[in-house]
Length: 419
Image (cartoon, rainbow, N blue to C red; front, side, top):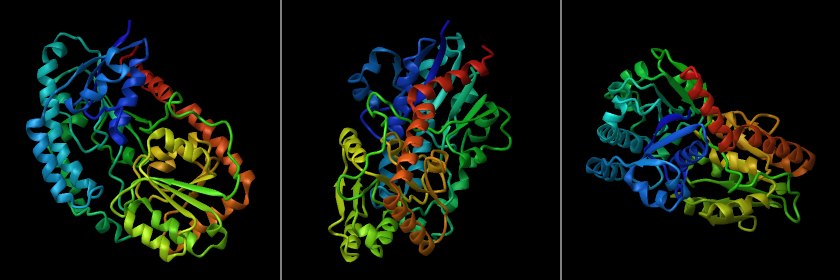
C-alpha cells in the first residue's frame, strides 16, 4: 500500500528558479513514485504554472492563501532591501512571518483529514530556511519531517566589508528567530530534520531528539539537463564559464582580479551568465583591467541555452564567498566541467578533490593568487580537466539526480514509519 504524504512546499514552481524550482523538482520526483501517494500544499501564486505542467494531473493540490498578509510584508521587505538582489536576510525575516499564516490557512484545509488519518506523514520541503517554525507540527500528531534545510552560513570574516555591500543590516538580529512563535516547539515535535549542508546540520537545536539526515537540496533532471559523458577540449581559446547573480558575494570580482595580472588567462575567454545590480560596476572593472576582449556578458539565459554554453566551455569558475546550496555547481558537474570553488558553505558538500579544485577561504589578496593559480593550472593540464570532469559527472549520476534524491526520501519515510 502506498504511503500517503502531505507534501508542504509553499514555494513550488516549474517555471521559476532557485527555491521554487527545488520545491517543484522534489515534488515531481516524489509524485512519480508508485509507492507514494502525494498531496501537495503550495501557494496560489504557483497555481498557473502548475496547471500548465504534467504534474497537475498526477497529484492532488491544495492552495492555502495567505496573501492578505504576505503581499504587504513582501512590499515592505523590498523597500528595506534597497538594491534588487541584495538584503536576503531582510527578505527571509519578513517571509518567515507570512509563512506562519500559510500553515494556518493550510491547517484549516486539512484539519479534518489529519484527524481522520488520511495522511501517514507530513513533509515540509520549502521554505528551506531552518529558522522558520511550523505551527502544523504543534497542531497534529501526524509524524512530520522538515528539509532539506539550508541557511545560516556565517559571513566570512576574511571579507569584513562583504555583509555591508550586500545590505545585510539585519544580520546582527538574526538570532532573534529563536524567539519566533512555534520555533522551539517545532524542533520538539518533528520526527526528523534533513539538512542540506554540513553547516546547517550544526545549527539544528541541541534540544532536537529526532532523526537527523544530510541531503543537499539541489539536483539535476537528466531529461532536461543531460549528463555529459566527457570533457570538451577547447577548439580555440580555453573557455571559463561562471553563472550567478552579479552581486558581491558571488565573487566575480575575484575572478576578474585573478585574470588581470595573468597573460595566460588574458589569452582565454570568460563567459558570464547572469545579471544583477553590480553588472555595470563589474563591466567597468573588466575594461579597466584590459579584459574587454576576453569577457562575454550573456545576461540571463534559459536553461537550454545556458546548458549549451556550459557544455562548450572547459572549466566552471565560481569563487562564491557565501553560498548555501550551489545549484549551478551541480549543473556544471552535469555538463562535464571541472569546477573551481571556495571550500566553504554548500559547494563543498557537492565537490571534493576528485571532482574539482577547492580553494581555502582566505583574505582577498591570497584568494586572488590562489584563484589565478588554479585557473592557470586548468588551462595547462587537459588531463586534469578530463579526470575531474569525469568524476564530477559520475558523482551526479550516483547522488544528485532528482530520482535518486526521491529514492532517498522514500527510504527516510519508510524508516521513520517502521515500514
